[in-house]
Image (cartoon, rainbow, N blue to C red):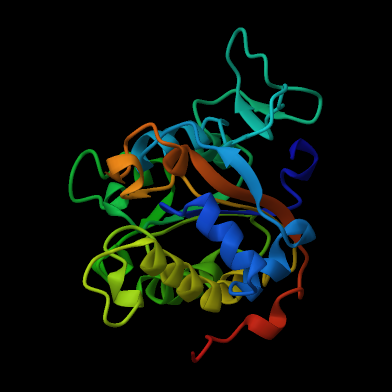
Length: 276
């Protein structure tokens, strides 16, 4: 990553609450074609989140502790806030002298934008203001949140307003937290009275129908865009008696992850909203 700072825009997408097993199954079944197109080798990486709920996971992410590959071994990090004794950086790691990625990128001249989804990005409370407060510009409204069936489309409409306002010669860091997979998600599966694994999957299909538009906008500024996309944690639907997250269960800790570069024009065919 360190060789891309300044020359590339950066897009960081967290698919809030998305389970790895559901993401992998839908990909294998051809139910998420836009993600299949984007992911290197058409596959998700299986990783472990540093935390079991949104706030803690994002605090870790922004200091360089992205989800860790699930396989044993030493796994150098893509970027890292400098601190004594760090054992997971190497010559490829961008190590910065700042408390978090957002602050570090601002020092490098990036315009930093947060488009939040779940309640931890709602600045109406001091806690909700913490994460978006790192950014030079942040956006949240109820239409982006967990109870809105069109939440991702509403976020994309806002992003369509935000990106053209950033000077063309200034690199952009765009962070998007997508709330659709978080409970409640039963509205994505008509006739479903209670959230379940199937409605969680339907929420991901909804996001997939529109995510090409995000990739198109992120790469519309004439420069390549380094993209990181992952879940912050998963969630349980009755496994071993558990419901929800903030518990130490396999379906909560195990998350999908990918990173890749989008070149200008790669997604121009997806620049308009999907009517589906």
